Length: 552
Image 1 (spheres, rainbow, N blue to C red):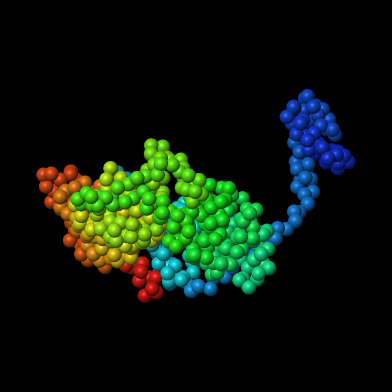
Image 2 (tube, one colour):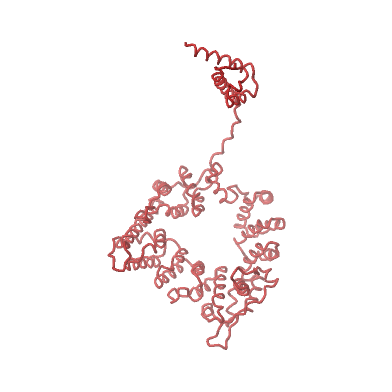
C-alpha cells in the first residue's frame, strides 16, 4: 500500500469517527456549504485544514450519503387500486380484434404532395367500425383499451362510440391516468354508480349533496324512465340553484317533453336568468297546445295576412313595431344582432315560435305547399320562409319541411323556401331516412355535387342505392369532363365511408387512368384513377370488416 492510499484511508476513518460522534442534523448542509465555498475558505467540523481537506470532504460526503439513505423511513404503503370491473358482453371475434389493432395503429394514405395514394385511410374507418361493434354488443379487448383511449383523446368525434365500446373499464383506467380524464367528464356522473329507482332516500341524498355531474346524470336517468318524477325532483331545489345549473337542468326536460311539463316551464318564464327564460320559451314553443304557443300564434298571425285584391293573392307582412314586456317574457330577445333590423328580428322570432298547424286557417285554408308558393310582398319572402324553416325543424313537422324544400329538380337549388344549404340540411333531418336519400339523389342529378356536400352529411349510412348511384354517376361525369379532382375530394371521402360496399363491383371500370382531353386539367386523369382505386379498396375493406364483426 502506498503512502497516499494509507493517508486517504486514515482520513476516511477519522471522518467516520467524527461523523459518528457528532450526529448534528445539519451535517449535510455543512458539507455542501464547504464544497461550494472551498475548504480553503471553510473547513467542515472534524476535518483538519490543509491540502488533504478536499479528499476528507469527499469521504465525509460519501459517509453522510450512506447515512442519509440508510436512515430513511419507509413510506406508508399505497392502497392498491380496486380491480377493473368485469365486462359481461361477448368478446370480439379474433379477426375483428386484429382489425381493431390495425385501425388504431396504422395511418396510411398520408403521402406527401397532397396525394393520398390508393391505400384506405384506416383512421377514418375507425368511427364506423366502432359503431358496428357497438351494434353487435361486443366488449373491447382489454389490451387495446389504452390505444383506444389515446385515439379518443385526440379526436373528440370518436369519444361517444369509443367510450361506449370500452365500457366501465374506460372510467376505471381514466382514474389512473390523467391523460384520459376526458372519459370521466364524458361519462355522466364521472362513471359513478347511481342509486336504483327504488332507493328514494339514496336518490334524494345524491340530488341534495352530490357533485354537479352526478346530479345531472341522476336527473337524466330519472327523466328517461319517469319524466314526472324527474321534474318533481328538480322542483324541490329549483329556487336555490345557480343560474348556470338551472339552465343545464332545464335542458334535461327535452327528453320526454310533454304537456305535463307546461306549468313548470311557465314558471321558468319568470326566471331571473335570461338564458333560462329563453330555454323555457323554446321548450314551450315545441308544445303546439301550450299557452305560450297560442300567444305566439296570435302575435305572428297579426303580422301575416293574404291580400286577395292582388292577382295572384299575395302574402303581406307587417312586422311588430316594438318588443313589449309580454314578448320578452315569452322568450323574444329584444336586442337584434349587429346588422339586423329590429323589426325583422322580432318578426322572425314570433313566426318561429308559432305552431305551424295554425297557418292554414289563417291563410285561407291552404296547404303548406300552397302557402309557400304564394308571393310575398316587400321583400319579406326570405325572412318569412327562413322563420318557417326554423319552426319546421323545431316542431319536427315533415309536411312543412317538404313544402319548404320543394322538389329536388326545381330550377333553383334553393327550392321555394329554404334560403341556405344549412337550412335545407336541417329540413331534411325531419324526413325519414329513405325519403331523405331519395331527395338528395334527385338534387344531385339536377344540380351536381358542387352544392350537395352538406346535404350528403345528413343522409343515413350506408347510403341507399338511389343516392349511391347518383353520387357515383356525378363523380363519373366530373371525371370524364376532366374536372379538377381535388374539388371533389370531400365527396370522395364521404363516399369511402358511406357508399354501400356492394357498389364496389360497379366501380372497377373507373380505376383505369382516363384519356385526358384538351380541356382537362393536367394530371387529373392520374388523380381520378387513384381516387377510384382507393374508393374500391376501401369499400372492400369495409365489407371485410362487416364480415369479421359477424364472426364469419
